[in-house]
Image (cartoon, rainbow over all chains, first blue to last red; front, side, top):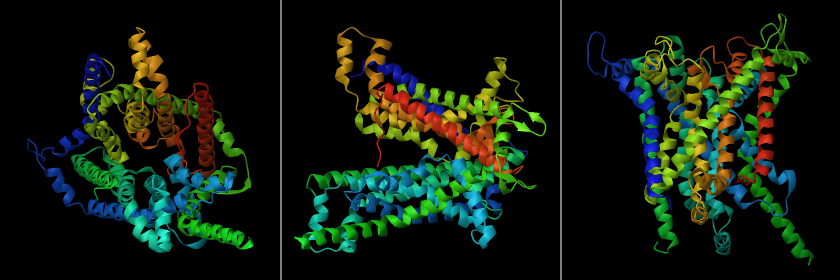
Length: 278
Length: 304
């Protein structure tokens, strides 16, 4: 396929790129072990400072609530939406009306996050001014995070269901399973990997985001990324910031490994099932 | 006969009801919390600003005059140069990620099949860390007195206490780093399906090197490349975090300019007008790109 000398050149080019991709992240971790004041050598001093900082803990707690809470709700909405679109699209419908759902679903994906964040900022501000509801805080951030996660969960579930044999539904119908029953006993087990995948994706998207959080946050809802951003703007990058950054990078790597193992495991299960082993 | 017709009509009504029961909540959520807010934002672009920068009636085109650079102090080219700089930064970042992606993708494809997903995962992984963390991380390499700044200083490129960051070069680097996976993933998807017999045929006809690449590999991977260009260029153009953290005042991009109108020195109508212009430029870019890719014979992107 690819000649040996080309392969070697590709490898010689690519490995340094891999190293470069991780160098900044590795430096964050390296500098987080900066020596304590008036000492030399590596230390976990910065982590000690971080552990005694109440605002860091409060920010961490908010980030976790935001990530898990928004991922749960967007998974519920996204699974229903993906299921509905894959199963109940009226065959005759054409034109704008039939394409409406996909247009709506793709808006959050293609809209630049800055425009997304500012739109929400203005909307929440207006709603708050006229009704007293939706004051900027963790609640508004939650709403925004759910909004950008739903399409991704939907597409994950849709992709899984679109590849499914339509006869399965007819078989369930023939066995007198009603809508709810077939949803619970047929759909949920089949899309379970997509549900787990969608949920993890939602959490990943939530902890990845800064821009949308920044514009929908209130003074009392500082999350970890907003805390870091503010601290850098005030006093630059400190070992303490690097300690927080290191933990955040570690968490994402852990999450990715988990996701990889689960999808791997499930894929193998599905393969065996397809061969009739299960 | 009529019984069968009613049956069909009933079934259709049932299907429609189920569609609404399952899809309704999710679609309603996105419409209420994103479509309506973004329409409100665009509407504000045509209003006047009060003393605090909040939108008030009457309707006015003044925000757009501000965008074009007209103010009480006369005309100023600042906004236009910011717009051009944003286009340039996004363009360079897209080019860099495309040039890096080709060797990386074919490197992954040259490895045994079982480890390919893992090699791909290691490219995508950094982009899953938080935007702020992975962006400020470059300050450790490019900031004042950082390793690469030290190297650049000895090549007489920068002063060590100023650093490569903040500056345009740092912004380009940060953008390319942030969006590289968006180029790699679609390119990989189309390179995976490459018809190698065409490459072999080319080789049999004594084509080699660049000629072989541009006549056999490139046309086949063009759809992936074109999707990648869109996925990288659009978010890079409107990025906020990278120019804020790595750019400083000299490398201001349109994202920061827009954000300033809603944070530091509020002027909502002006900010909304800037947003509208940014979206129009993005839209025009997309249309031009579509035409170009159809000329080049690129395939349609997959959709729901």
